[in-house]
Picture 1 (cartoon, rainbow, N blue to C red):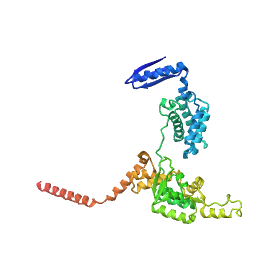
Picture 2 (cartoon, rainbow, N blue to C red):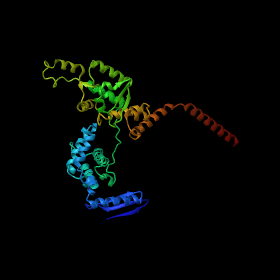
Picture 3 (cartoon, one colour):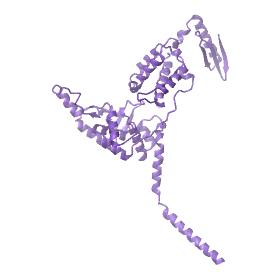
Picture 4 (cartoon, rainbow, N blue to C red):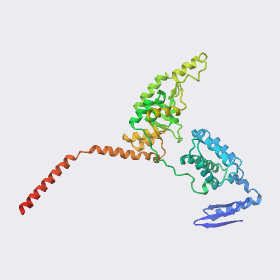
Length: 387
């Protein structure tokens, strides 16, 4: 019912299971392969083979539920993974057995995503497709770790991730920075100043609390990479935080707030104390998409996103002489690969620096040219006399 063959320096077990599926597994030693074959023959004879093959009984819905229980608290879960999980349920079916999801199914799903139209009426980008496929890959990988299936369908073929174009590097010049700040309302201006001077992500800025600001540092615990990092405060940020503290009368736990007493206070007479507190401290800023877009329009800045302020921070740091290692640590990049996109700016900075030496040796060159001219005159005179 099965065979054991030598493959290079390993031994391969090859057999067909009770539902007609061909199974092949590799072992380092022949004895291990023989022992495994004997075990599986015995299980089949007793009718218990499918009991140890959990992916023949576990549904995709059960795996998705387990995945949600373990990763539902992730910052990115509500922003994207909830949508991905709904898509998985619709496309594959909650009652589908994990054993029935093959490599061709996940590849077909990837190709379908590539052609899917967004709400804006455009084709999805490669980066967008990759994020959803990475989530699906992680789902099946965790299923293997949790012993809900033996092998992920992704492991049966080539990588399904698309090659992305990560060459975009849009950042503001010093003149554009000033134009943007002049176009921002006061609460947005504080946030933009923070982004440019710290390189923090939008979510990290909007959720920032005063308890995270101490000893000249900003302490970030919940980050995109799930690794804490500390960002030093420069003089600009020190002054900004002092001004905000004074404005809030030390009564708000959030750093960035916005005073809006309109729709929230329908009956000021009944909410006098609350109204007073809101006027003094403001409410936490939940979103700035609309106000930031308006500020960009006023400033005449095109093709720019809030995340590009992070690029602006890194680019201006490099242009002013910071090392790539410093920028990597402040931005929180796990590897230097992401930071290397700013390397060419470092070369431009070096070129500017080296140009400071222009003219340093011009006197020497001029003197040498005069000497060469004098030697030539002497030689001509000598040749004329010789004739």
